[in-house]
Image 1 (cartoon, rainbow, N blue to C red):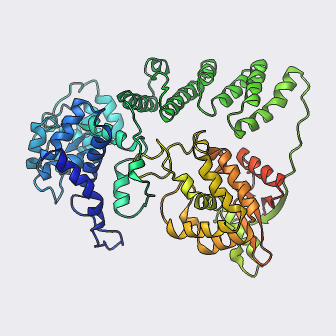
Image 2 (image 1 turned 120 degrees about the vertical axis):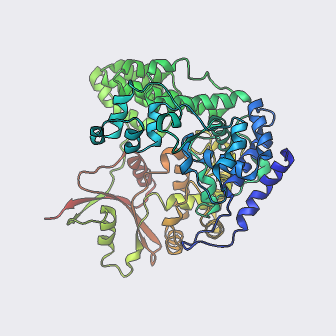
Length: 571
């Protein structure tokens, strides 16, 4: 079978999933036997369609030869690809739909995609066997049974330094398969998703109906990588992040970090984040001067703020003042501006410079409640306390960041899921890839303005209700469906003035990354009066976070009813 057949499989795989009407006892759909193979074939067909002009010979050859294998061989290889690691004991590779594993593996061994005698280092062997098996394989004295396995492996590493096959280590009672195309298939996964966060399980959760995703017109999908260099840079960034997690010496990253990427905004942002992570590791290592240099050479958000903190920590007050001035003149976010305003009084005091008077922020209203000990979260206990004597206790709800953001997500659904070039790469998107970048609103300004214009009339209620019904359960970066119900939505639309909704939604759009969070824990509705109040709850010893302060001040500047409830322990 050739490429045409592979494409045909990919085109039909989605319909194949929907054919399974039978359900398991837990209510989830029963998956067809080779569901995972169809998913892998979908990845291959998508990559072929999307990147045919960018593929290496190794990649093209794999995609060309894979359909020619027997069904069970394709299935076995896919099972290996989708499992963790690249070494598998034959005794652990039993699948009813595949049958005899050795027969299925033979064509893969002939293609050198799988090895049945991979050379195993001691640490690799130890990951495949139990401690008792390791002691038997190495013919160790019985006293080593008292050792913990990691210590035993470290102690034996020098004595058993030579790699050997599993049979040479342990005899013929079992053997191991090594997946030789693991890195190639991992590259396919990265090329398909365009990120390192999503895994093969995305397919399974979609097949089972656990997650549903918004459908963005496929013809408008854009591929994440426009050149082969983009693919290689992306891989390099991922490898650097892995090496960073594994503790590679920081000075060795200089030659590994890719050069600036001028023709891909999202890739350059990932590169800048890598530089930020390296700078943070220098800071954690106590090398603050180097960390400052790295932060200042980094364009990732928060880097300059970290440099300001380190300047102050080093008592470099002039340096801190200069960076604060830069941030004030061109702030990257309101969070940075808030930090600068907090830092400047201290900096000016140290330099004996008079600080210019700034606008006085409104005082955040607060009240206190005494509560006894309880197992429930303090927010829930305050909710129950406030609702105790009300005619309808359900008018006090715990919502935190789940209500205002949901109303925003429902009203602005068309703008959020607009098929902007480079925003959606596949069918499993929780939201656009540029959601938390500085370009999110700018690239969709007209569409967001059209959505917010509904708030100038009563049309917004119908728009939100319609989205609630039509989009229920579909993944969204703003809507937590588990926190939303019809009663909560009805009260919100009756009691939140449209002007307040517009102000909140504009607040979110000013900085999606920072301003999606920070909304008060509780809302109390007064349906008979068409009004509300929002309450942030702070338990004993807790205090307002910076993003919460910013939002509460913003609300008070626009005459919104917000306050903070401080809980003290009653006797």
